[in-house]
Amino acid sequence: EPEVTQTPSHQVTQMGQEVILRCVPISNHLYFYWYRQILGQKVEFLVSFYNNEISEKSEIFDDQFSVERPDGSNFTLKIRSTKLEDSAMYFCASWSTGSSGYTFGSGTRLTVV
Amino acid sequence: GENVEQHPSTLSVQEGDSAVIKCTYSDSASNYFPWYKQELGKGPQLIIDIRSNVGEKKDQRIAVTLNKTAKHFSLHITETQPEDSAVYFCAATVNRDDKIIFGKGTRLHILP
Image (cartoon, rainbow over all chains, first blue to last red; front, side, top):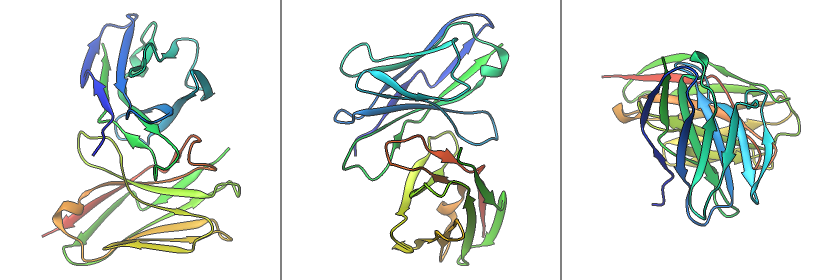
């Protein structure tokens, strides 16, 4: 069964550093998303991306965040200057017409120290 | 915007018994309601979904019901098994390509 692949599975970074979280969506999917889940809390929407541009973003997705699809396969989330409160699991998801629902990756656990 | 409330936050049931998780939503425009199962260290996995033109949907031991008038929807798991232990999230969205709004999750424990 096709999967969404995320790397790394765990990243530890110093406060103020830039991090890039990487995702490889399912190959024929056209819609891409990032969500995050702070430990023990619900999954929250960050941003959606379609046709090489952001479709929608949440209040969480401020100027410190950016997304990019640098080639035909990767979809990245960049946090420019990490804060302690950015520590969370970050999930990438993809979807396309004909799919029953999003497919989520296994996530990247980001720890900001 | 949409708000999804989910109850209970924790549920323990004896193996073989049924489990029911209930959710409400606020935006009457929502018409797609997926349910996700999240196992430890993994991403949410879609287990069943329902659209607003349907009142009930069943897939083996799992069923969802939707009351669009009351803005309620529920997940029913029958004949529970140890592998059903996980966190379950209900969610709502207007269209399947839109952002999904999740409930806070229900941690389901299946007791031996």
